[in-house]
Image (cartoon, rainbow, N blue to C red; front, side, top):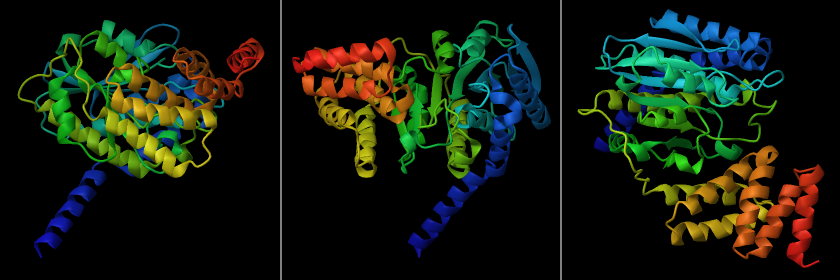
Length: 395
C-alpha cells in the first residue's frame, strides 16, 4: 500500500511540475517567432524588429516593466523586470535567427519561449530577488546583444546574482531518441553546483563550458564574473539550417526541461548566501561518465557510423578514462559536435581533429578523419586535404 501511495505521489509531483509550464503556450511562441513572416529574424531586419515587439508585448502582458535597449544597426535587446529587490537573476535567450528561409525554431525561438514562460511562472513566486528577463539581439553575429547588455545594463551588473541562459532547445542532441539537457557553467560557482546537484535527474548532463567555448550569451556574463548556468539540448542535423522548423520540436520535453530550470532558478533565488564566481573552475566529477553515455547512445542507435567517427569514438572512450587533462573531454565534445552537424563539420575535422591524430602518430584515424572532411569540402581546402591523405598513405 505504501509503495502504491508513494508512486501516486511521485506521479502527482511530475504532473504538477510539467503543468506549471504550458506546452501550448511554448508551442504558440515558437510557431509565431518561426513563421515565414518573420523572415528568419536576422538582426537588424524588420522580422527581428517584429519579434522584439512580440516579446516585449508578452512580457508586459505578464506584468513586467519592459524596455527596449537599442545598440545600433536597428538592433535591440528586450528587457523585462519584475520585483522590487535590487538583487536580480537574469533569465535570457537570443531571439535573432539565421535570416530568410531559416525558421530558427530550436535555435532559438525555443529559448525565447522558455524565457517568456519562466517569466510568467516566476512572477507568481514570492522570491527574495527580482527577475530580469532578457531577449538578446544579434547573438548569431558575435554575441553582440549580451555583450552590450553587460556593458550598459540599466540595472547594476554587480547586483546580478546569477544569469540563466537558454539556447538551442526542444530537439534531442544528434537527433537521438534519448533526451539530454546540457547544463554548463556550474564549475564557476560552488553554490550553483549545489543547486544543480539538488535537481539532478538522468537526462541532465553537467559539464564545463570550456568543452564548447564562448558559443552563446553566457560568455558575456562570465567575463563580468557573474555566476551563470547555460542550458541547451545542443545541436542536431538541422542546426542553422532551413529544416529547423517548429514542427520538429518536442514541446512536452521542452516544458519538462523548463520546469527543471524553473526549480533551479527558484533554488538559486533562495540560497542563504549569494553565489560567488570562482577564480579557478572546479569541473564536474561526473563529466567523463556523461560523455561516455553519449557514446553509448550513438552505439545503440547508429549502426552505420562513418569510419572516422567509429575510430575516434573508440579512441576517445579510452582516453576519457586514462587522461584527466581538459584536452580529452574537449576533443570528445568536438568530435560529438562534428558528428551531430555534418554540414558544419569540415572545420572541426580538418583543423582540429585531423591534426590532433596526425600529431599523435595515429595515421589510420587521421586519414579517416581527413577523408570524412573531404566529403564536406571543396576548392583549395579539398585539394589540401587530399594531399594530406596521400602524404599519410606514403604516396
